[in-house]
Amino acid sequence: MLRSVIDKVVRRQRISLLIYLLFLPYWCYLQIDNFNFSAYLGPYDFLLSNAVFVILDALLLSVWIVLFAAAFIRLRNVKNRYFLQRDYHTPTVAKRRKRPHIYTIAVCSAILVALLVIVVCFNGNDNKNIGAHPCPVTDLSVINPEEYANLQPHDIWAHSGSYLLYDYTTYRRDAEPVEMPGNWAYTPYHYVVYLQEIKIKSWVEPYFQECLSDTNGPWQKVDISGWDEAWYQSCETTHAESLAWVGREFEGIEDLPPFRVQQIYLRDGNTIIHIDYTGKTDLYPRLQELYEK
Image (cartoon, rainbow, N blue to C red; front, side, top):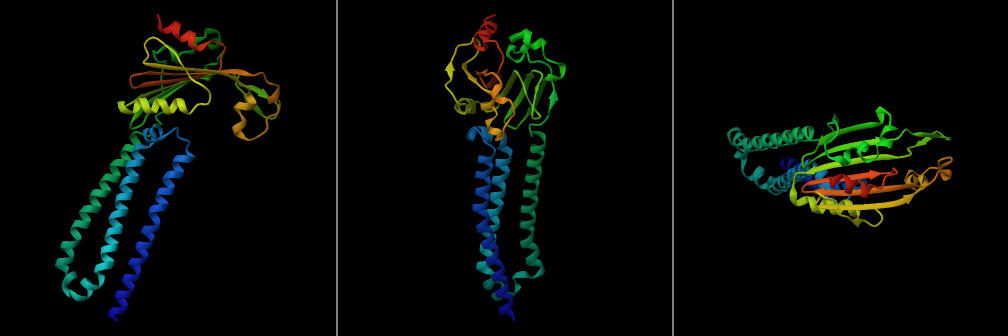
């Protein structure tokens, strides 16, 4: 009778160990899949956006290791301690042995709650409407007043948010969409500025290089007064090429004229600005002119 009870306990512990052993490779697979699916530029881009979740995953992995060790020790000692030492689980001993486990659970729960609070406070989705940044590059009216005058009020917006390791602000200006046959539309030109303030200075340079390496085509290093680094790129493309990733046919897209895409990356200390522009102004000479004043 006692042997049967002990064998059942041992069997349950072996099943627990097997589950723990299967969980670790599955956990690693989830992290790799998350990295690949989200199309991050590289490890620094991933960590800047997911630092809290990396910490949370590490904590969960630590809990897994503790549980695995506990299950292994329980399996090893179940026969000896349960069978040979009858007083091992007297009420007094059991209470004394249970107390450290309660403390451990309480501490782990407190850490998990603290991490969840951090996730809520620094989730990057503040969406606070803000005014124009004093930096000239954020204002299309300074770059090209004529294009700016053609925009409708609802086509001009800006918002900001905060992650644990960086703050961001996005400014976007879009022309009125042009309706096309087949229930789709395209935008003749747009002007997007993405401004980031990286909080770990040693990560700024490698993250900046990741941003540059992610974009196809050659980058030209340029000199703009007031910035530590400036890289410029200009190329001509078609709407068919720009929408090829969608994987569907767009009626009349081949008849649209090609357009020019200009991009520029600026870095000043821990501030990184990325500009994506499809308008008519030569962006690099215009920025030189603005920052020489």
